[in-house]
Image (tube, rainbow, N blue to C red):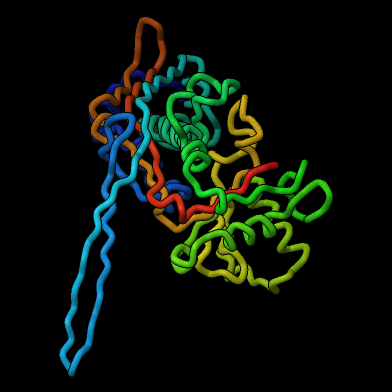
Length: 327
């Protein structure tokens, strides 16, 4: 089946909410399940409220008095405006439509093309943007120097006592020796740095994909916890940390040591442990909806996709974050 322009025209006319090609994989992404998600941030530095309720109860002579006070504070979501454009030339489209693994009709093939080559790839890049953007690192590509990403914010504002520095010249590994420090050693050190208030909550440890591999390997080789697979809720993205059911270890491409060219030492082998939803992410759905375009250029013979949106992230309580870094 060759690429069919009339089928694309039909898809454009009939497909409602085309922006869902990006929004749905964003909402379903395993990493973002542990963020507090916003969809209305338009601007580079946007304040969001935090409401903290403190209830007190006093009991005197069999009468109970309840009092409650609410404190309103703010945290900042740092964001940037992104203008995404992707072209698919006619040769690429014909190859995609004639792939042996496609059995659907033209409309379903267009859906699959845009979901795979636009939606999933855009969300993958979003995770890297969120964690690694840093205007202070000269070696990063220009697209990674547009705002203060999560690592930059964490390194700037996290209390020094919440930072664990690995041994000199050491990198993450599955064992503790002269050149590597095991993931279990690092996570345990980070848990010891969190305040009691944070430890009582559901926690998440964001790690590079290779770190999740090292953790699984270390547990398998040592069998220190006599683990059962069903207890760890293993998947290729996450697992429950052994002996701590309130801690999920979640791998993210955004913390990969090879996520983007030009990463420096401060962005490698990073692990971040924090309560679930203490880190916020925002994707401006309104701007995305109003700007999203899919069309076919008959003159140049290519399919193009245009999407514009604000993307940002922020931390509510920096004292409830513990992070590791190389020496």
